[in-house]
Image 1 (cartoon, rainbow, N blue to C red):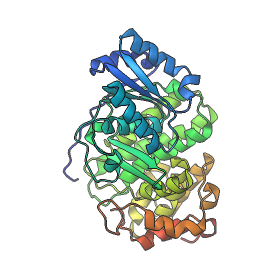
Image 2 (cartoon, rainbow, N blue to C red; image 1 turned 135 degrees about the vertical axis):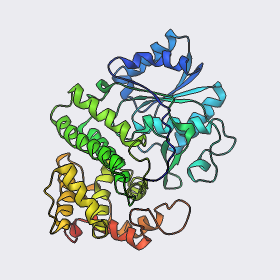
Image 3 (cartoon, rainbow, N blue to C red; image 1 turned 180 degrees about the vertical axis):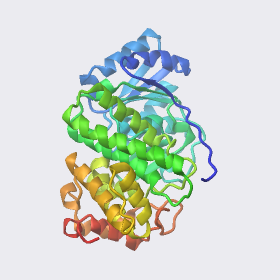
Length: 398
């Protein structure tokens, strides 16, 4: 196990009726003028926005609003939010909705106290030194943004989808009422399940030795996601199923599963290029990327994949041929994604073979250089080969 620092500073209010505590918690964390930031109308239709407004009014906390957040949240709206915060002297930002609204709120929160272009932070040209307090009222179990130090923003003018990690964008509080996920379309729910699994896998697929505790924690969360992900498709208004999924999403990305171990994130970087080019849902893109990544890296990591198959999917270990076990585990992931009606090939995603070379060259490698990831360091040629494994005609060539 590696040395690590770990701080999870978010205050969580979980369960039925907790959305009524927004005003109380905003006052607890010294907010006096709030920006309410949300998407395209779901929080209006389900009544959440009115509940939050009432809660703030009861505590005599003033607020302004900015809606319109899209999936793969846009830099253009972040700029608008920053200007609104400066004009209205906002001192607190609340994102209402899924990960897109929360990520956009985080970007506004650090941009509002910065004299330059907030995009500098996402290009790693500058590092945030402060930020407005940001909070989350979650309506979708997926990104884990309600408990993480990360935010992902798409800059459509530049054709880039980049991430930021900073201690200043941990939500000071997050409200999680699973009831607000009952009416989500099944596609969004499925995308969320895949996203949550990917957050665990990016930590689980590691070369760090002697991390059995976090291995077991990762495996438990993955098992819960698969079990409840299957059940939610059959019974979308089952409170306990939705509650387990919502808390699993937080645990998957607040880094309690990732301490003391080297993490990878290659699959996320490759998917970001798919989202940037085709504007596809992040979870759907990951359902295509993850199996191809696993297939490409299998040969050098047979025992890690065999352990994953045995412990998560209860596949009998073939000690004479562990690769057989490992392959069965990867196939089990593919079948699970299919059961959620997720795409598993370029064709199903709407991606194009002729774009592969461009995608491979655009994949962001932080710190420069031409080697991506840690689990298996990938060259640009490797990245292109992984994209090609996503083609339907290459599905069985592994």
